[in-house]
Length: 427
View 1 (spheres, helix red, strand yellow):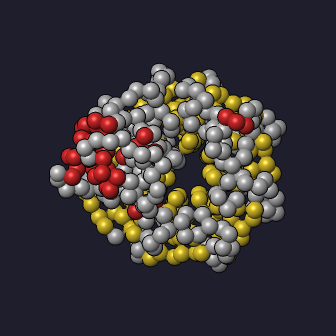
View 2 (cartoon, rainbow, N blue to C red):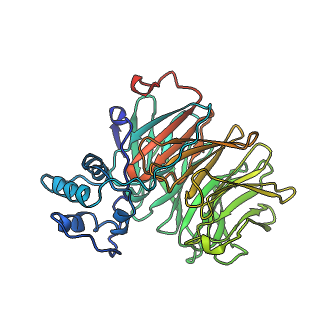
C-alpha cells in the first residue's frame, strides 16, 4: 500500500494520448526516420505499438513533454531527445477537434494525477463517505482519493490481474475483475486483505465489468469469453452462462429496480436482460442498418437505467445514444453531435439526465442529454484525451470520470461547487 499527497498536482492537464506500460508488442507501423527514432522505439515501442502514436492528434513540444511524463520517468537527455523527435515528427493536428454544443447547465471539472505512472486509471466510483476509487489496470492496483485533501492510497493486487472494473459493496469492500488472469477479487481496505476467486471454467478468461446487486450478489461480464457470471459472496460459488448470441462480447452491466440484470453487447447489436432467479436471458436487438459501419464490432459498449427503468445505451460503432423501453420493446436513437465517428463510450444517468462521452474526439467530449427536451450540451474535458471508458454518479448527484491516457481521475460538479473546493478550481 502506497500513500501520496497530490492535491497541488491536480490542475487541468494538456491534451495527450498514451497507453501505459504493459507487455511489449510488435509495432504495426514503422516510425519515420529522424534523430531520436531509435530512442522512441526503445522506450515507447517496448510498451505499446507505434499505431498508438500515429492515431494521436499530434502535439506541441510542451504537450509531448507532459504526455510522456505521465507514462514513464526518463532521465535526461533521453527525455528531451524523445520529446524533440515526437514534437517534430508528430506535430499538433486539428482534424478531430470537436464541435461543442452550448447550453444552460454549468459544470466544474476537477482532475487529479494518480501516483503510479502509466497505470491507465479507469472505472472510478465514489463511495458514501465521499472517497473516489479507481482501478489502475496496467499498474495491477486499486486506488483511493480523498478529494477534499488530495491524499491518495494505492493497494497492489496480485501480479497479472490487470483489474478492469471495480465496484463497492455495502460493507465497504472493493470488488474487481481480474481481466488478464481469469479471476474476480475483493479488497478489504481496512485490513488490505485480498480474496481472489478463480473462474471455475478455464474458458472464462477475461472477467470485464461487475456490479453488486440489491441481493448482495456480484454479477459480472466475461467479454471475449461471451459469458455472464454471478458470484455469491457468502459461499464463493460462481455460476457462468454463455450468451444466447454467439460472439456477443458482453460488456457493460447494470441492475434495474426490479432486480433484472441488463448487459450491453459489444460484439452484436443488442442488449440483454437476465432474470437472476430463472437465468432466462432475453435479448433486445438494437438498430443495425449498415453492418459494415461497425468497424471492429463496436456496438453497444455500456448502458444505464433511469428511475422509470428505461434502458439507455451507447452504440459506439454508429455514434448514437439509444433509449429502450423494456415494456414495449420500443427503441429510439439520437445521433451524437459529432456524428457517426464520434464513438460514444461511457454512459450514466444522474437525476434522469443522461451523461455520455464522444471518445473519438480530441479532446474527449462530455455530453449531457435531456430526455425532456431531446437536446444535447457538451464540454471539452480539460485533460484532453481519455478515454472515458466508464463514468458513475456520485451519492450527491455529481459525476466521476477518468482519463486513462493522461493518468487522471476526475470529478464533475454539476450546477454547483463543493464548499471544500480549493481556490484554483473555482470558476
